[in-house]
Amino acid sequence: MPIIPGKIGMYTCGPTVYSTATIGNFRTYMLSDWLNRSLQYLGYEVKSVMNLTDVGHLTGDNLGDADTGEDRLEKASKKEGRSAWEIAETYGVEFLEHMAIYNILKPEVVCKATDHISEQISMIQKLEKNGFTYKISDGIYFDTTAFEKTGYKYGEISNLEEAKMVARVEENKEKRNPRDFALWKFSYSGGRSFDSAQDLALPRRQMEWDSPWGVGFPGWHIECSAMSTKYLGEQFDIHVGGEDLKSTHHPNEIAQAEGATGLTPFVKYWVHGAFILIDGGRMGKSLGNAYTVKDLLDKGIDPLALRYFYMGGHYRKQLNFTWEGLAAAMTALINLRGIYQASLGEKERTVLSPEKLDKVQVLQEKFKERIEEDLDLPGALAVTWKVAKSNISGIDKAELLADFDRVLGVGLGNMKQKTENSQISKEIDKLIEQREAMRKMRNYVEADKIRLDIEKLGYRLEDKGGRTRAIQND
Image (cartoon, rainbow, N blue to C red; front, side):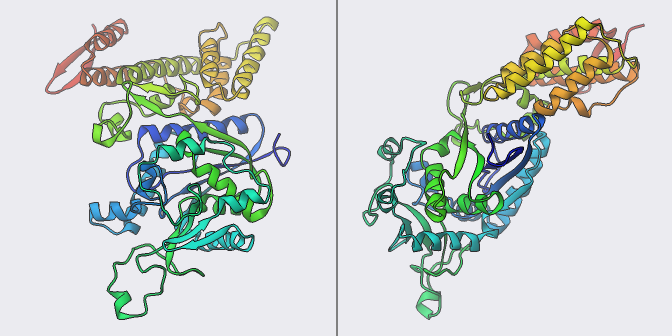
């Protein structure tokens, strides 16, 4: 049950905007979108908030200690020869554009860490007042031991001890406890103001601010606690993120928020999405398989086919991505759209018999049951296909499919009614695009099947001059 009846506050940990988000990253954001859509479908008023991390996320996070290493924005700045601020703006705008391409509803609030420095400082001051901080040479740290001594529990949603055991960086000996984490990191000046010739000669960060503790920048974790409580209150309903955030980032968010406000629980429900595998292995830029929406478009794949593909597996389970699997998802999506459009073309509403009316209501209820059951999208998709293949005729089927698409988000509701000729022409164009995609992936068997489907519609294909066109048979 929500904290406020009929209303849901939902926060999603968004991207660190130092590079283009991958298709793997977008599995988490699609999960957040499906959850948002489902809650609205079920009648809740949802306030959704997502952050953009544009400072403080250090490269040590990859090695098991998020308080070490170089700021990802600063590192990208050196690599691309642009300021950290330009990097953040470029990839932040691009991320929102890619969200739209994937038909992800834009959250009501999209907030940047650098726009909320004062809120983060204020929360650290509350923690300091409550006795949960201490200072060492490189910053202000959260004291997990002091936190637990006052009766709070730390790390309930993770296995933090296991996470610390796999850290591949040298432990900071100044920390009172290996689990302690940075709230405010000092700049290269050691936190002093740059007011002397000696100070001015020190290297400068591009992103740093004055604070009660000295010049520096916020730790990675504090931004989410500060911004989520600003927009959703000191306690709210749902927090979404990738499964990698379960080990330290989210436990640290909980500790900061509860330590500052004194209220528990900080969040009622935590929703973590599993990673994807690529051809059975991990995704990585060094492996050349950190695919983005551009790779989909270059292969002639409709990005919404990726949404369809992800709905084939439950969000808590890892899903293996292959181009063949995505091609099959695109075929299924094209077929579903074709059924929807054909139903939409039947203008007369059928008078449903009591048996068929009951069937419609049963299917609607089954769809609702699936999304209520831990967001069972594979089950919801199966119900959608029962509707598509059912003997419900005319606009009744189209309306039911469009209703389900309020959750699925694969674009059915946006399709317009076509004349028969233009509908056939559009279908052929889509099949040609799909065939070209299969040929680029050297999946010639599937490409030939698509060619046969086109011929069944009364057209033959002509490949000439690097392009393919359909010619109607005499």
